Length: 204
Image (cartoon, rainbow, N blue to C red; front, side, top):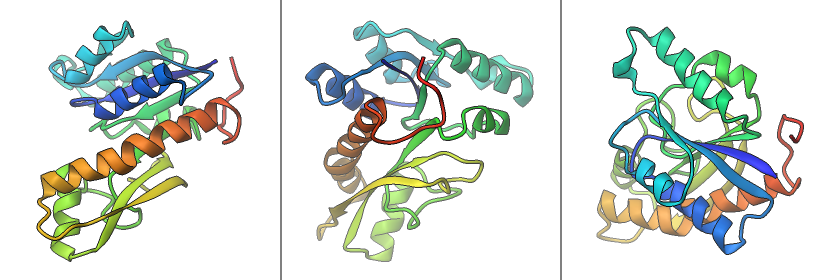
């Protein structure tokens, strides 16, 4: 059974997509063992509670410096004994030591077709604002392994989504979530859980 820790900062819609896919049998041989948030008011924590999933908040404001915050974050992740760490809208730059320790064991979902509209400063609605400003006809989402760069790790899967005339950033964001993010993230997790995608950790 693949042990998954999900790191979140906001509403947790991708977390909910994973929860639903496990419940519906679209993800097999996997369980979410912990939800970790850096925001105490993140609705994702409520989703975890409602589904009986252990959760913890590691809030930067509770720590005197970045180093102690990073240590607490590492402790929260390590405490879950995860086989896979999923970043699902986690607005924290991971400490390099965490990336090294969990090399090829951390995946992220990004709301564009990397290498377009990614990297520093491209997150949330900003990604969709940039896509509309550029006038692209197709956007989408990407699941990738996390390395020490920003959105630079190896791509695992992408799914394209059409941009429609008259789209606002909010409308486009919703379509990308529904048609791409909530589809490919569960697919990738299921394939990892069943050995179709190799990750860098021995099974527990």
